[in-house]
Image (cartoon, rainbow, N blue to C red; front, side, top):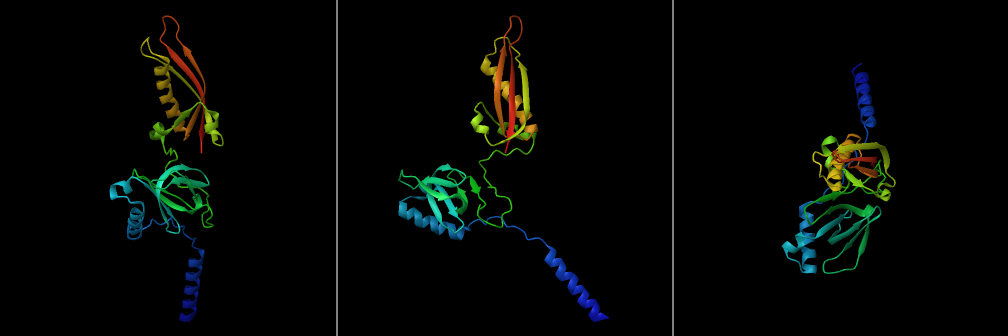
Length: 220
């Protein structure tokens, strides 16, 4: 009886282990014990002191390669940069990059696009606008160029009407206040961009100036 109970317990335990889903690990950050000696080596190659080296961007690949230079452009497929004291552009496939340490202290961490263990083919990119709640309304970007929202998802139509407090308010002042309202409304929709489609200014004699704006909200 005891042996039967023991076999049954072992069977349940093994099934429990099998049923547990695999946990995806985030890209590991390169330890300082590896990064610092490599940066020192590159500093000697490019004849950079510590202050000058700190101002450059550092590109770190999943193969633990380190590139020092200035980031010129980051596209969906590659990162283009220049080496110290050079003007020629060089490119690295974006799927090879683990992280970028910028000269201003900011860090971008990437997920490899060709990694089969990654379920969602997305990049962790701090350059992206992140809207979590209404408090992030200042991050919303306004544009009048439809090309900037091409490929984004429509979140809804927006209509704003703002009346100034004084009679001599300029069109720019009216639009500044209207833009604040647009951004706040877009944040409620968790939108990242607002495409301004039309603006109507009203300045009738005896009335306070006002503006009416029609726009559309878009998100990733």
